[in-house]
Length: 227
Image (cartoon, rainbow, N blue to C red; front, side, top):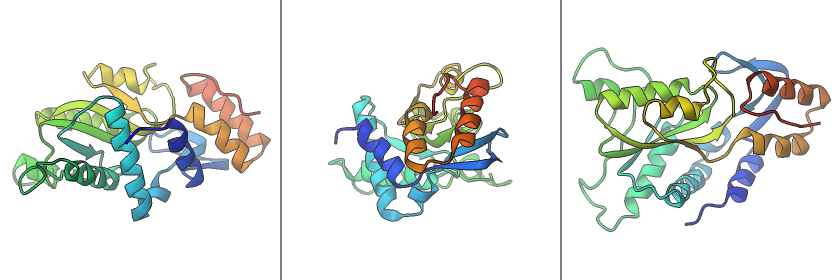
């Protein structure tokens, strides 16, 4: 499979992953915004989740990575990571009993039992790619990377399905924050490319456009022009 940026971006736009709001909503990061990037419209559908997994695998190959497993940040990327791992494992000629793990993290760790049982429902192993759905300040992703490091899991990369392209309160981008942890961060798409297309397609109004431009002046890794 070969990765096509245009096809992936179109997949996002066609499946209404991006939405706009006249009144700002509060994101998981705690920031408010007049737009969201939410992959739930995709991951609630089996066919679309498989298609998304295909994009992840083709991007992984395009970047030259050869992981042993994919692991999703609990809980936003759990389902797509499981499907991706299954498809990735099934594509290998040595696929069979005991050849590949099927890792899954607990949204809330248990308070008892072995460490791997408290944190995981099937622990990731060896060379692992971490999947996050959307990154804003990268809090959940950084927490997951820290947990995996404590479990001595080798993280070869962290992939975001989309990056909102915001700067953290410490002045770093998500990429820079993860680099400080020794982890390469890459995003399959980003808001700077997607938002102008989505804005033209949905036409949420000039007030929303101005508000988003102001958001990027305040938080953005770069300014954006919608109007």
